[in-house]
Image (cartoon, rainbow, N blue to C red; front, side):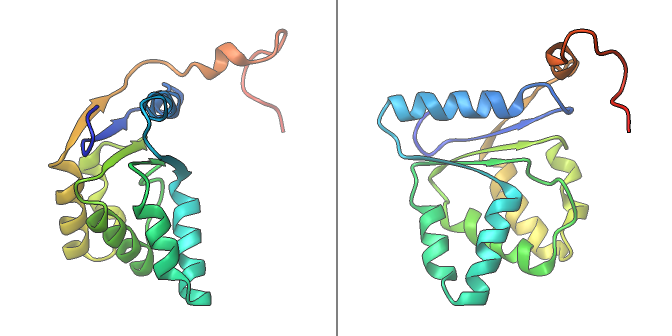
Length: 156
């Protein structure tokens, strides 16, 4: 991955999207890049807090600054209008800077999660059409990590 390039890693739960994103981030650090990793929910909470305490601009600058920003678990749930606007601003301001996004949904399934179709189209057009898209498929690796002697789904 070269500077300014972006990658979307998507596929079912447990196939290693986060692991691959972190490995790419680690490699970027080894090459001298400044990297930040965060779950989408944490980014949205951080920016929401900035609206509350009037530090939104500073918080946004901190997310724009890294050479590579890794956004994990993107498009997990419906977004509020404010969250969608914050993501639009973040992606717009990071234009030309590297971004890695992980999601368990295909990018084409992201549109209904946005309350405003215009914001969705603007944001997703920027993301999808300027990124390498990697479909990760296969079974979840997590059952292999289950403690010995445990079988079946967890009990309540």
